[in-house]
Amino acid sequence: MKTMLRQVAKRAAITGGLEAARLLHATGLMRQARGRGAIFTLHHVRPKQARLFDPNAHLEITPEFLDTAITRLRHDGYRFVALDALPAHLASNDPQPVAVFTLDDGYRNNLEHAAPVFARHGVPFTVFVAGGFVDRTDILWWEVLAELLNQKKSVRFHFDEIETLPTESLQQKQAAFDRIAAFIHAIDEATAVDRLKTMAASQGVDALKLTADLALDEAGLKTLIQNPLASLGAHTISHRALARLSDDIARDEMDRSARRVERMTGHRPASIAYPYGYAGTVSPRDHGLARDLGFTTAVTTQPGTLTDTVDRTALPRISLNGHFQKAGHVSALASGIAFKLTGRG
Image (cartoon, rainbow, N blue to C red):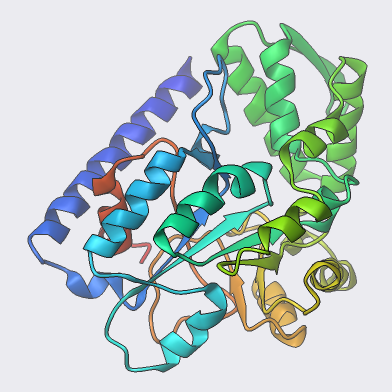
């Protein structure tokens, strides 16, 4: 219960902050906070599905909200550019702020639901794909865990030893999700994810099939990039937190990912998104690897707007969050005011 109450309180606080930022933006105050523009992060774009337990709801927006977001940004004076065009904009004296759209992980709904919205508005977008999802060798563990907890009244997981976790109530499901997710990020990620895959299989959930159901394969991605507005970027192979990997493994993950995209598109991608992308999962070492490997842009999930001096291999992005799907929220986020008010921008 305490976990659920904390989440409700956190969302209320964020909503309040966004409303304050929206009002300040509407009055024309703190205009400098928006800088040169913003990069937006999306994951799923699909009609809302009713789920009893939905711990990944923040990673999902509706096509209608994407349409609303684009319309609002255009109203607010933003010009839409592709991610690969961003360095030229930042090097220019163009005073008009830009908006860049990116989507992580390569979900099927990016082709089915997001691409038509972008096409209708003539807005370019970049999809970051992990080779292991494309080739069905790695799993979307957060999706597998949510599916498992939705189905079961208890689960058995191998922490330091095998434990049975009750998952009858929503509070118990959330507690189990949080504990297993924290464990995956606390030890060797590959080992922990393999344990989840084994646990899922023992309880009737095929983790790799779920990847196939949710993520685009090579044929789907090739269909996607027939759209001249679409481009692909690298997102590693196994979607592990780079900062926790050795130098050689991190470099290999990034380079192999670029080569996997190149085999689909015919050219090496200029951009990469670091998996997870927040502090602790990506480091200055990884920024250096991105430069060494020839990426001209590399994006994090650290919130913020763009400045002239921003590190092109540590670009901030603004998440279009499933819990905050209102036009006013888009203006508030893009304005950068909310990040200034909280000391993050």
